[in-house]
Length: 357
Image 1 (cartoon, rainbow, N blue to C red):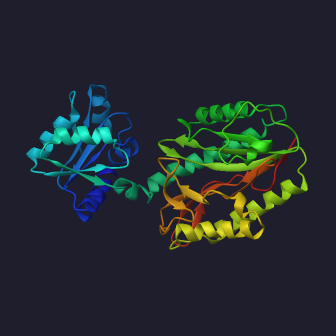
Image 2: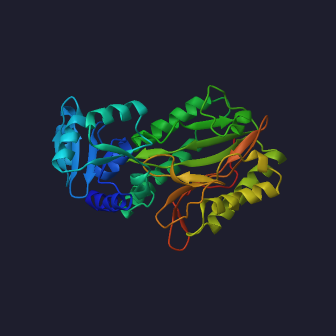
Image 3: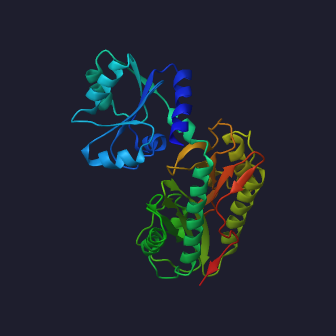
């Protein structure tokens, strides 16, 4: 599979007028080569593909990286890359402009000498937007684990427990059931803190008659899941029910109507127009969703600024929310795959308002 990815990358290099590309970012390196270690460089040309790493990963790379010339580099990998390129008669080298610091750029340019460095934007990321069946299978398993975690934590949440203890219990559950880690710092935000869109778990003890917002995911076999559910501890007020019902209506409407061929802006409007209609437009300040895969946030985006056309194989979240300072907030989020005719929903946790305690 990795060599098929290399061939698709070569087509992009040709379209962008690049003789070669240097890949150093960890996610892109893993996607193209299959290497799961933490150090290494990939160089892809029109005819060859090289993987360079240091002594620590020589044996691992020889087992994981197939179809590449695997090489152990010394103290200066860029010196060795220069020699490879000069031997191949290559005069320009593309680099990942989003992942290379200015200091690295200056040093590389000095070392490469006559070989010109050319910035390249998002080439591997463009390939990663469209998931292969093998990737979708892993993402389904990651989503299933998130669903199991939500079911588990419903039996743990109660008045008096700290948000941070709930987050820890979720992390332990995910890791003990196969996850490498959580996809990101788990959000557990209760009471007034639930109005914080990214209210990472604190030492606040959960009270009564208030929202608890849970946003979490499992990082599983190199891929992320991302699930948000909001519950009430105790008895919900009319305001709790109002806000929850609006967010749920918006989310269900989006899930019923997102289709391939839409732009990210059009998908975002499916949620935003409903929330705005009820007078809460100013309380929904983030995009409706984001791409999901090897990273928790990747292309494409479902937002007012996105003109990306949704295409079969893309995986995105759908996560509208309403956040009322001083009261609380609701977000409901699922992971979906764009299909030929609509979407497939990967997450399946219940979405009716759950009241605990």
